[in-house]
Length: 164
Image 1: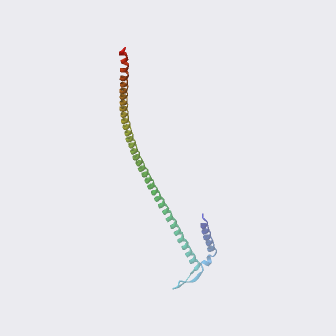
Image 2: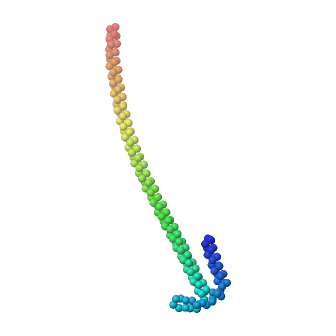
Image 3: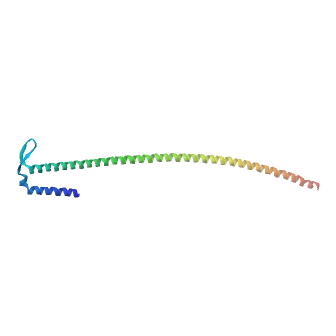
């Protein structure tokens, strides 16, 4: 218990003990004025009744406040749980959207890589054909040059044989 609750229990116990010790004084009739009329009644008993009414009223008020706080706490906990679930769903949808975005980007990149690879292969094929053509032309040119040199050398070499 809190110190405040212990203090209230101690105070009510002291008031109860005071009332029990002075019960005869509480029941003594006194002339009471209500503004319009006067009445013979026990002042201590009326004051004790008023004090008990105030204590009961405050007890009901405290119970009302605590029950209101308890209901508000439960309602806030439910709202918090609902908001947490909404946030989790939103997060999951963001992850799904991000996954879709990444898959689309990766597919586009793979398509671009494939197109680039095909273009490079086509260019290499064209260069290979060009190189082969150039090589054949060079070989033919070299063969022609060698043949021409051979023709120049062989007819000159054949002439001395003819002379013999």
